[in-house]
Image 1 (tube, rainbow, N blue to C red):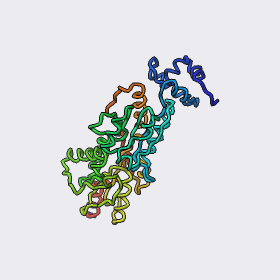
Image 2: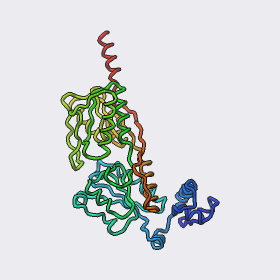
Image 3: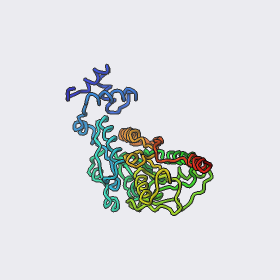
Image 4: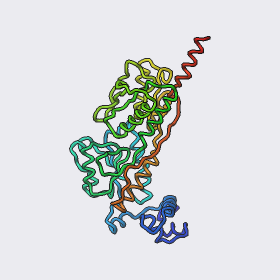
Length: 347
C-alpha cells in the first residue's frame, strides 16, 4: 500500500465523496456513526495519516491527547496501566491523534504542579489513568480542557469517568467462593487506597451480607501503605478458607506468603484475584480471577474524550465496563472435600 494515501483514495474505495470522508475523519456532523466507523476502519487499513501540522495551524488544535499515569503505577511490576495506554494510543491514531504519555511523579503530585503538557498547551484533552490524590483531582478540575478519569472516580469531582464494574465483579467472585462451601472469607486490600479497591471490598461485603455471613475485622487485610507501596501481608492466626484479593499481583504475593508458611492452595485455602493480568498465570496454581476488559475500557475512554474535544459541554457521567470471571485452579470445593473426608472415615 502506498504511503501517501489521500482522502480521495479512501472515498474511491468506499464509493463515497471526499467531503464525506473528511467529515467522518474529523468527527463532524452529517455522517452517520456507522459510516464514520466504516470510514475510519478503512483509513486505518490503508495506513492513512492525517496532516496534523496543517490541521493544527488551521483549526488551532494540537491533535494530541495527554495520558497521565501516576508514577507509582508504572514500576517494573506494574503492567496494567501501560497496557491500557497502549490500547488508548492505538485508538487515538484512528482519529488522527497522538497519545502523549505523562508520568506524574510523586513530587509534582504532592506539590500540586500542573503537567507541562497542559501548561505548554501541548494537548487538546486529558485522560488520567489510575487514582490520584484528592488535592490533585482539584488541579485536574481547574484545567480548561476536556478530561476523563479511567479506572477510578471521585464523588466530588465533576469529571466523567470510565471504570470496570468493580463492585459487581467482586460480588460475583465472592458468591462463587460461597457456592463452593466457603464461609470464612477474607478480603486483601487497603480499602482507603483507591476507589477501585474500595468498590471491590463493597462487592465482597454485599455477598457476605446476602448469605448472612458476618464480616470479621481481622479478615480485612492490608496490602499497601498510604503511598500505594506493597507491604508484607499479615495472614490471620485463624486461617480463612478463602481470600478475595483486590488484584492479581496481590494474590500472587499472598500465595507465595501462604506457601512460605506451609499452606497449600487450594488444599488448605482458596485464593482469587482481579484483573486477569500476567500474575494470574504466574501464580501457582493459576488464579481464578475477574477479567478486566482493557480494550473496551480504552475504547470507551477514547470515544468519550474525542466527543468532548468536539463538544466540550458533552457529559457521560460514570460509565461501567463489565468484566467476567475466569475460572482456573486456585479455588477448592469445601463440600466435596468434606464428602471425601467422611467417605475416608467411613471406610
